[in-house]
Figure 1 (cartoon, helix red, strand yellow):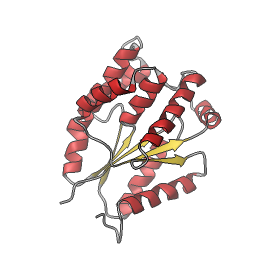
Figure 2: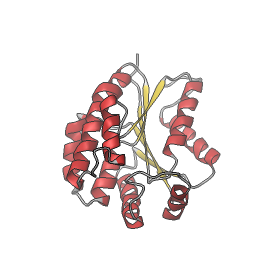
Figure 3: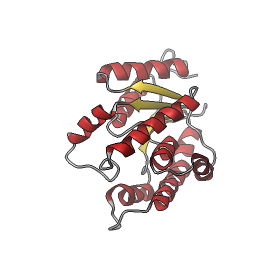
Figure 4: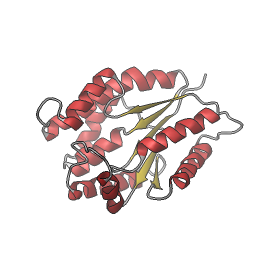
Length: 215
């Protein structure tokens, strides 16, 4: 049995990650490939509790910047150990809504922590796990602002100012430029079906999908 593939979706707020993960999951099912969806922070019972602390101030106070980093890493460690590695070992593909690139973009470029220090801490949390493929769904700030305004409620990160979101977007694009073999930038401001077709074609080509099977 071949090992599964680990595909992550990254991007600024409102970039359509959840939508396109679901569509890729459907595409893989049509190819006869088993896959699971997960998210960060979250994906485990512990991770979902941490998500409430991070994004919705469930403790009654917002975490300070360093605590924010550590909470994300704790959630990620739990997810990698209990969900991602076991699934990959069974030949199941894992589709993740955010992974460590979000830490580098949000807490590194956004909050100002040194990227190299974050990478060292992340390697400890993940045991060195690296995605096979990462889609960076990119949208201009104007599109992001419009999409967020349509939401009934916004979490702690979505409520941040535009300068913070600008730093994050610039950070993601810099990360993609540094890892062109792994990270594929997709303009997700385009029509949904156009974006979906591009993602499917990248996956088909990258993993040599033929006749409903992966090699």
